Image (cartoon, rainbow, N blue to C red; front, top):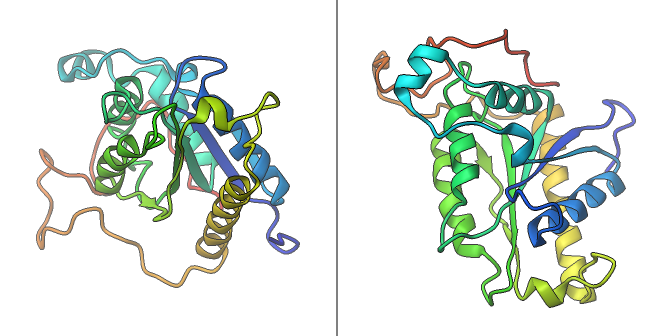
Length: 231
């Protein structure tokens, strides 16, 4: 992937686990390395870097949106795309990750809208955490994220990753690297060569109701002026 004209793209790589050396944190490191190898810039972060309380509408009205969500919003706004390596908890999304998404979605402009996103997971199970990724797609796509169709799930990850943190099987490793590479090509194309009009998160056919609005035009307090996503 060449960036001689436009300069390197920036990818925010988020691990949905709080543990420093969890399987998904190790997978996120591999994603960061693959992005770097593809000529782009990767910023590796964890959900624990953006601590927020449980979402509470009363707390939001009295205290505003917490600092952790504001920091995450800023990182999203600075990136061209998002990569999430998420554990699977009881066949669904980790609560700490969903809670961060819920808080951050309260900003306007809504930072997930039109954000290119790649999902991946690692698990000791035979399905590799894939059920959790399907659950994670729902809120992200509802918020307008362009979630890449090809998700990557590493089954039996406790043995699939070798002592150096690499995917031991060469075929699986090649598939993982190709998936990241193809996603990067899509991000480059949509960033530098847009060919579609701005998407609506929801189209109601009328002026949205502020009580249910999820579009960019909504009025909502923010703690700082949001910057446009880099071009």
